[in-house]
Length: 219
Image (cartoon, rainbow, N blue to C red):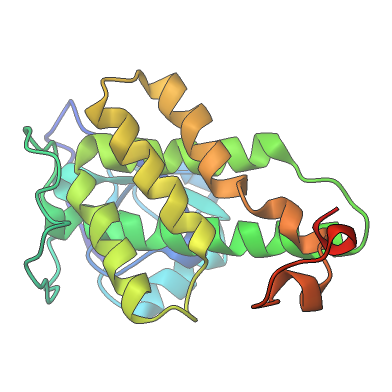
């Protein structure tokens, strides 16, 4: 775990759960006083899986600095979804992909939790959904190509994630193209994330029926 001097005053911090950390990320803040841990207060770079395990012993979440996060090698296939928004990117695609991957994992897991809760008659925590969506919005505002790249990966591996995440991201990106403000984008993304949530109450044989529904089934 390499310690790096804090020589940049202005940087972009992103909050992540420790389990979503990746090698190459630079940890600049933690969820407890530095004095309660063996880590140095100027921050450090995550270099190995052992580093992540060590952080997990002390912290539940941390803040990473995108400016000092190392770029990772990602095989990126050029296509229409990359460069979808032709504007200045605040972070590189290679750096933002690290964050986008963690956000996608967390958001998709959250949707699965919602579906599980609904099956057992519990309500959906909309505020929790909005918090997750706000991270998606922040990532898209930094560099929309990263999140769009994640949706392409899901299209190739449909069983690895949820359709709801794709709708959420596409909604935010389209809203951004229309000039919507961040708060509006969060509301729009939340609607996209939860747009199919009610289908959990529809019987499986009706939801997947390929022929015309009867009046009773439609009701």
